Image 1 (spheres, rainbow, N blue to C red):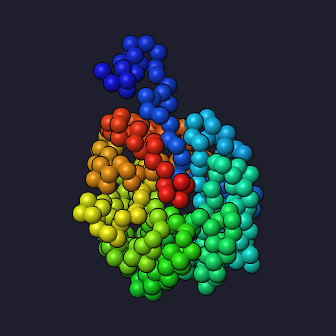
Image 2 (image 1 turned 135 degrees about the vertical axis):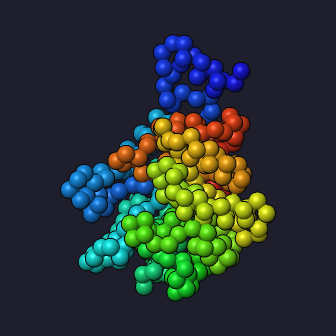
Image 3 (image 1 turned 45 degrees about the vertical axis):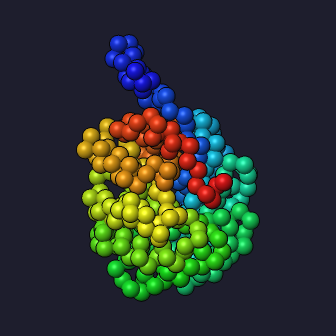
Length: 324
């Protein structure tokens, strides 16, 4: 009997087994984390209890509780460039948020690595990519959030601009973490057509760096987003046929597995993970704020997916090339 099955049996016979108890080792790294500077926390606070100002020390405590050694800090500086906001002295604030994340990572150099971020449609975007590339703390990667930046890949101008950004990241040797999901609030078109633009136009512009698709092409929480599954199917099929354009492509699972999620959603997510291959799946838990699961609880939820212990152990051991 597998250890996981035994734990379930003991839970039925005696006291409930804690949700975090698992035979699977903890992940080596959390590949999708956010910190919020005091300025960013104030910006996001709508009066209904926005995210707290989260600093590196607090995150490291959460990582310790989950026995996770390392984490990637994905700057949210792109929020200042959202078309839904009008920000005075916008670029100055983008730079300040990126630099704040860099300074936080520098406090724990063996454990945290910061990525800069920017709205790629902004006129200052290429300048900020170059500036981050010159920073010892930010040179490793760049976070792009297509939804927050209202990127529409079916728009040729947007696609062309993204190709420039991807090419710049490639020149600088910067990994890319891409929130591919189009805006939900604006109900932008999203699905297979947008994923094909990503596959056929953007990935070829960055052939030499790691590209990580956040939330497995969705956004979470959970895995009930049918358009996101359609988009993911395009990329999963490209991986399955050994398309050279996806040879450096990885996928993170941040915020997808949830306690009590529908069995059908859990099964669909597990099938996509297997179709892609567990070697390309990276654990991530998203910002430790609001209703998001913290790193330990996020991993416990992920371990409840219908995956084999060996598959879970392989995912736990995966480390993106930009962290090696």
